[in-house]
Amino acid sequence: MSQKHDETTANLLIDEIEEDLRHERYANIWKKYAAFFSAAAVIIVVAVVGWQIWRAWTHEQRRHSSVRYEAAMTLLGQGKTHEAATKLAELAKNGSSGYRLLARFQQAEMKVHAGDLKDASALYHAIAADGGVDRIYRGMALIKAGYLDLSIKPPAIVAKEVAPLTAKGDPWRYSAREITALAALKEGDRAKAVSLFTALSSAAGAPQGLRARAAQMVDIEKAKTAG
Image: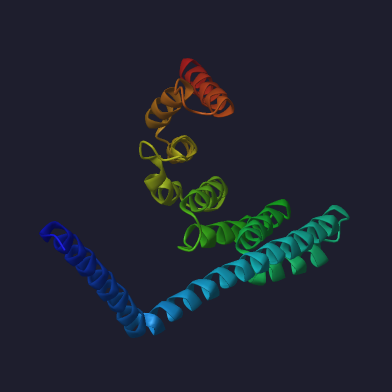
């Protein structure tokens, strides 16, 4: 055989040996880690199945809570307030998260309609203080409580409670500033109230209804001064 042929044969033999060694290494690696790979596969399957079960369960919970909430609203519409209140109390305790919150807001609204502003305010403040509730809804609850509190609490306390919401960028800042202006007016600080109402009446980002109310308050206070 020629030297070139011998070299080619040798190279092929080396390649074959290296291939065998690679297969042997892979086989050894699999033997060593087979249990780990199998366990990981089981974990993934269990996680996927668990997710599917959880999603189906939460969907059913929401559907069931929706039916219960509609039943409570039907009772309320029929004037059966006691029965509606009972169903809402149950839903607020063990309904799905969204409907629990909705039931709590509705409980407070029922107190407002019944003229029980103190209990309604307490319910709203409870929502506002609940760290498990999304911040936007805690702010909404505090605003609702603030408007009620103007009738049942010292205005300085009301203004202090809504003060954090008056900050620039807060989604409830305009309502909080309106409450602050009303509190100032109740305290007799007409200059501060007029200043706040004037700013609100021209605030581009404020809701139109709120701007209109603010402008009306400015006109009323100016008329009082002129008179």
